[in-house]
Length: 306
Image 1 (cartoon, one colour):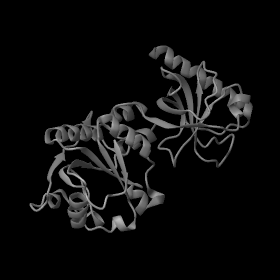
Image 2 (cartoon, rainbow, N blue to C red):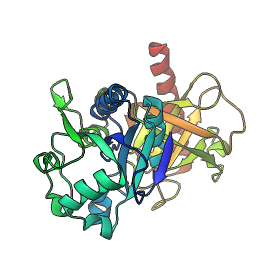
Image 3 (cartoon, one colour):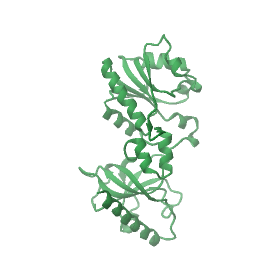
């Protein structure tokens, strides 16, 4: 897959295109990608995605923007896995936000990207002030045809990034997994920490979290990237109020029955079941006892699952 960071000055060839933020790449997004690939094959055009960075809501209201469900790297990996040939990452800045709907449709999609077939969601709006609609996109002068993707529902609820965030914030990982079509996961590289867990008898792999996470707490987890098979574990996601009050969010994972040096390794940590909320303990002894109890609960969980 070719990745274009920014928009080309002019299209080099016609493409089949879908547009969106694709945060979380939930089942609705997956349906769009599948339809894109199908149409691109029928039309003998490269399948392409136009996405944005940062998220428009982060640009307009950074303090009120929702936590991200996926990184740019996550999205690119998923696009490639679906068979997307090209991804265009448009920088969403003041200049881009000021584009009129007509300019976006005619010059961005038509001239600069070479779109000949465009797939959008039924609530798609674009251009300055979100003035553009599907009807405007379908103007007869466009060099492309437009298809609208209908809403994908999961057990009666619309699959959306908002619905996934709501489920995660409530600790309902089963619901989030149903909407995503897979367990919610956080990817990252294992970094050096304070080695506090090792001194407490529970050594953890530390993974930095980009931005504010969509959930916090202690979880039963499954770790990918430490061998040919995933490993069972317990994860703590949050600010570690007992150890470092006011610290930055961190993902700490204790991998069960595992003792290898893995600094620098890239891992994917699936959060399967929430054990409890984060809490501040009066001392390290109380924290240690609770951590060992968390590990025991995780072993019980996997004993039933396996």
